[in-house]
Length: 368
Ligand SMILES: Cc1cc2nc3c(=O)[nH]c(=O)nc-3n(C[C@H](O)[C@H](O)[C@H](O)COP(=O)(O)OP(=O)(O)OC[C@H]3O[C@@H](n4cnc5c(N)ncnc54)[C@H](O)[C@@H]3O)c2cc1C
Ligand code: SF4
Image (cartoon, rainbow, N blue to C red; front, side, top):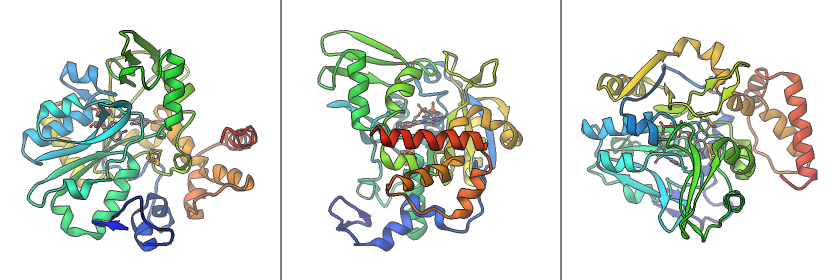
């Protein structure tokens, strides 16, 4: 049934279809809205936390944490609704509400487990309080679309913040990762996926006192990123299009102009997607919490693909993915052809062909 407006696990098939259509991210791409491959951009800065400890500990450069701290410190909101690890099983996550700067900082970093920050949001939000929400692009898209239909809540949930997302690793991916690292879910005491450097090492402290480390590019490239949830393969928005501000890695480039995942000091691209986001970004920078390396706004169209090739490829090959999956008899979302064709024009034919063959092979081998 519907609980406070959000469907819970008991929703029966066919029930409240209209509700799903109005909030589910999949149905956003059926509309006629104008679209560019990187979404709307009011301002894009390259920057990082001016606090060395936060910059080191955070997932990338700590920009998201700094924006949240600015909001709390300046009483723009009463609390931040975000995500941290489940203390009982660190491969899992829990939603959390931070009301102090110290709490926000203690919960920085990326959790590569499944997160459901919208699950209890209507119970969390108090009618006399203001909040900022941090979530994956799909969380933010669903919440934004829900807020558009429930104006009353917009007085409480003021800011929507997000990060780029290449997929949510499955439960199985976590187990495979821990096995390769020499432990298991039961043996794992603490688990940090990245951070403590940039990108930092995936680090496990086991209950029997061992510290196990794996390079981030191996942990993500060979385990976590290989086995993401089925729906993530059809995700059209890994870039937080409906957030006020979205943050991502702004990787250094190697000699071949490819992202360089070796260790560096962390940095973000920080994208304000609308006027509210721009005002917040400008205010956070002015407060001294974020150091700005460069204003990248005018370079997005010509250069950003070098720094985030996977996000460009994902959108540009969505038509290919859907065609290949359909051919294999799989269920696929029904996106508008105009979106798919427009995005497909950003990617070379050879890339799309190789991608197509890759999908077919993986389905035949039972890996997809
Ligand atoms: C599953 C996943 C996939 C990602 N894929 C990409 C990618 O392809 N490209 C890219 O550039 N960046 C990706 N990121 C984002 C990247 O890891 C950083 O979060 C981002 O660059 C912001 O860095 P930061 O230092 O500003 O964040 P921080 O200052 O460390 O703050 C991170 C914030 O995100 C919240 N958070 C952490 N994990 C989750 C979660 N699972 N669900 C909801 N909220 C969470 C935390 O509560 C915290 O408030 C991904 C993150 C995740 C969790
Ligand atoms: S890839 Fe898309 S659908 Fe999957 S978790 Fe990330 S934002 Fe959500």
